[in-house]
Length: 433
Image (tube, rainbow, N blue to C red; front, side, top):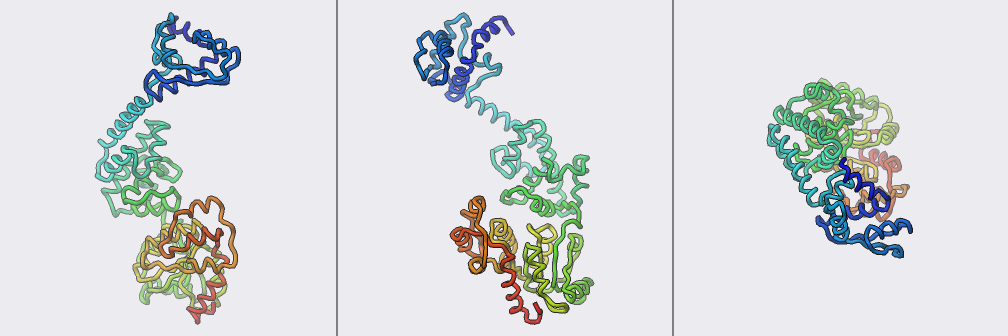
């Protein structure tokens, strides 16, 4: 540090100058020039005395002190330091003080240069298009990329580069099924690199949204599994499963005896994804789908041994990869999906996704305005639930959300179980439900 700079910083070491130059720096950044004024208050009598000496005017009786930036620059120019205000601010704060517009321009150039290097390594139109959207300030995963970039630019570049490489491989080898840990190990050497709690795994989730032109959704473990499976990446084929009862298989299918015996014993079956990877000749039927295991069990509890039970599928919350695989097969076989869920934002969201996926094959089951209003009990919607419902609609009942907001309560499937069982007894008189 030069002696003149040391002398200057010593002169302005009084803490009242920190407050003054903080305000002046902010004004200069905002205007982009030496102009305007700042107004300051909260100074002690001693601090006002120091400022009076610096400004060359009496500020001791002023509760609010107004200081023009041009006034300060003139003082600095006429002092023994003979320095312009922008140069002084950079020395005072030990970093270059630039106008906000100039900072934004430099940051913009740096941002585009960041993506230009990545574009050179992208091999397919899919990844080049995604990078172009991200560099333009949009696209799936933009906020995640921006956060990583601000935290560590070099690390962000490496993660994004690897994600692009992963997407290029998936594009070039579409239709190939492979284990996620094996794919991750081949990509990075680390079989856990694409795990859900790793930045690369989360970023690939958003990259796949772009690949399949999907609307960006909130990150979630089950959504991630479904999307990765669509891309051909399976974590394993046994941990993802779905609970069923009463499903019927065409005679001649080698699996038919399993389902016939389970139905006769009113016994549920746990079908892992591995089971569903092989084709099954399902018989067309009305399939009753629910996400609540307690409701599923209560329906089976009411059935007598040896009775004919309706086809039931329990997703146990958000539909797993296995559940969606099964429902896809059933829809393709001509089955109608009768879905019932909880009357809350989460339940409606599951229903909305299934309705969107299965179109005309989807039917609400105790999941409309009439069922909601007939429910004997419910609990008050929490403020965050009301916020999530506001502005939302469901395709199968245009009045449902409006009614829920007006009544102000959430209704859960458990209170409708008895009505469901009565409905089954009416529809399936031989079921002994």
